[in-house]
Length: 212
Image 1 (cartoon, rainbow, N blue to C red):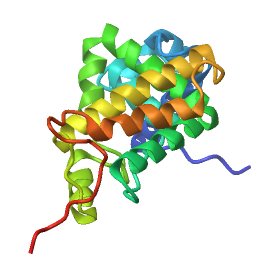
Image 2 (cartoon, rainbow, N blue to C red):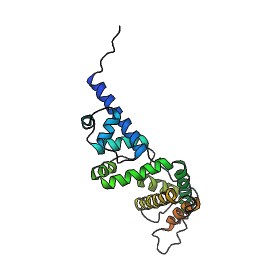
Image 3 (cartoon, rainbow, N blue to C red):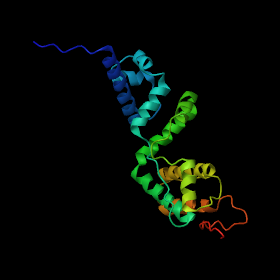
Image 4 (cartoon, helix red, strand yellow):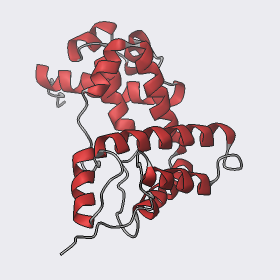
């Protein structure tokens, strides 16, 4: 009778690691991020020691498991028309994504809340590199320059403000519903950032014109 070949130590370690990641992702999706190392190990059919031999600790395991859940897909701002129109479209796209990706958004918010309670998790999340396709401030500035815009504030400040505004609106949309936070509010609020920080300017988001 043929015997099943024994796994090498490396293969067994890889299998244990995969079992822990799968168990952590499943528990996080079912119960949120307050799961313990013991609960994850038990769900994976392994010991608590297996967690610490495969990961730096609970925070490391949680960060890697959360990447499998992929909370929210990155959104890019299409620079077309006026700056206000471009930001308004970004707001409308976000409103649609809140409905489409409500579960992913909920997980993102829970992960941020858990990170505020766990300094190690917080630092690890801040160190996670940007996703491919995610629009950073430098990319946004370069695309704005190519489109002929003068941004009302530095691109990094605009990105932070837009993310904070969008995140707050998304949270209120999830909590209170679309009747209280309709699609149009996302578009209007984001378009208002076209004039943020301007002094002595109309903030209408017109293109730059060069004098020849």
